[in-house]
Image (cartoon, rainbow, N blue to C red; front, side):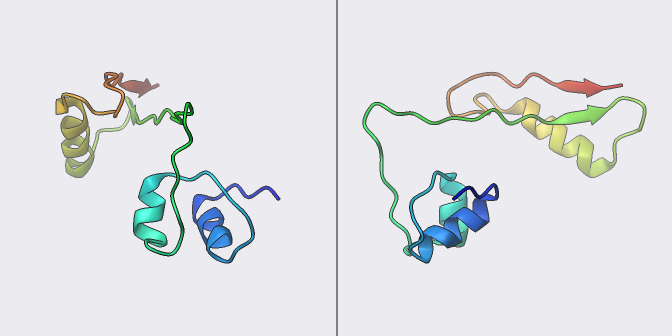
Length: 89
């Protein structure tokens, strides 16, 4: 079975339909104490997350505050990689 939505995967695992790979955040917020989390020796799963900013539209106050917050983080990603702003034309 292939399910592309993290929440649907978590709920399917909770219902006993199999196993899945989802982020710890989804487990914590959606199915805490109802599914088991396991570490697999020698396997480290990561994913890249991108944020972008439109250069032709002025940012709202909230967007500017969020962007400033993200760029101010010393280690914004758990593996210590720096944030690279993505500017859209």
